[in-house]
View 1 (cartoon, rainbow, N blue to C red):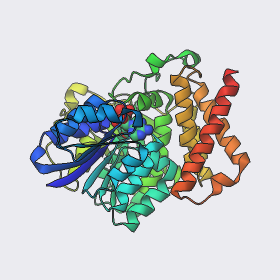
View 2: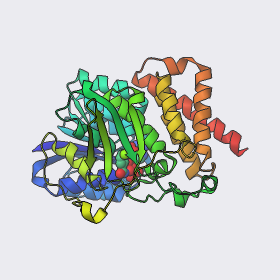
View 3: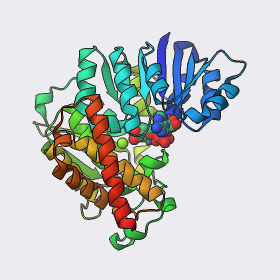
View 4: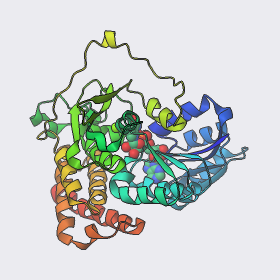
Length: 390
Ligand code: NAD
Ligand code: MG
């Protein structure tokens, strides 16, 4: 039996992971499941999977969790520290599917016990890629990508020498506003930004797909995961979301990864790696699909793509600033304090402000420094938002 834990178990990636595990429960011993506000889901899954412990991020919900777990053997805990403690429990495989920078500390704790970390939480790579990779190396732990594009690149690279790689192309559906007139973007509503044409995902990543901040994060994630130069990473609009990424080699070959828009493929690949196992995803009928469409991304529509390049050129803790500013701007849009197009302005201005403030952005990449930078960048971004609203 493999011991597994799922961080962010109640979310879209977490639920897809649980779906796969429930199909072969005899193969897994579930140690920890974590969630935040959806106590009913967390408790139901923890009982069904006979988890050792269920943890909610929200301390005020501990009593609710205890009540929901009554009569079972599952322990209950609450708070950010309890989530990190749960990540210290030894397991073979961990799904990192908390949304946002909150996934960083549990991810590092999991790596420190030498497990395989299936990483959906791209924010932790964006804000502290070097730290995660160093921690994995120091403890003999493995990080496997779960983001569909990065899983696709990873699969296309199996058996290939990295020095033969010329370029990595990650595709983007273009999100909810791909075909909107640019002048209408300013007035895009929360409901419009929260619906994705191809993927069924959590609300935050769905809005990030519409603004292309998701793809901007993924460009940085590509750099961190595969160690390539930013100039070797390209973004290609592919509205059908069936080709997830392509790797270009020095002999002109392009290896494309093609599959349905179902995250259970990438999750399953990371769960069974290095084996391939049957997965309950659709088999594509290419003759029925007929053709694949591609276009170059328009950076004037999606300034996030330009900002990602600036962040990579800046280096240091610029990724931590970028992620924190993006999360704060997204909160501002969700709360109705910012227009859709203002999110990119807030992120740019926050990066400029933090650059001018100097020292933090050049600090060594330790967990404390990343968290401190995250905190300062959130304050700076909030000040920009307040200035815009006022
Ligand atoms: P989601 O919003 O559906 O779920 C997020 C999970 O994180 C939930 O379990 C929630 O309880 C938990 N959570 C939220 N705030 C927390 C906090 N402060 N502390 C601890 N836990 C907290 O999100 P999702 O779509 O499942 O995405 C999860 C991660 O996977 C994100 O990093 C996202 O970018 C990445 N990802 C998602 C998809 C997808 O298809 N959904 C695809 C690729 C990558
Ligand atoms: Mg992706």
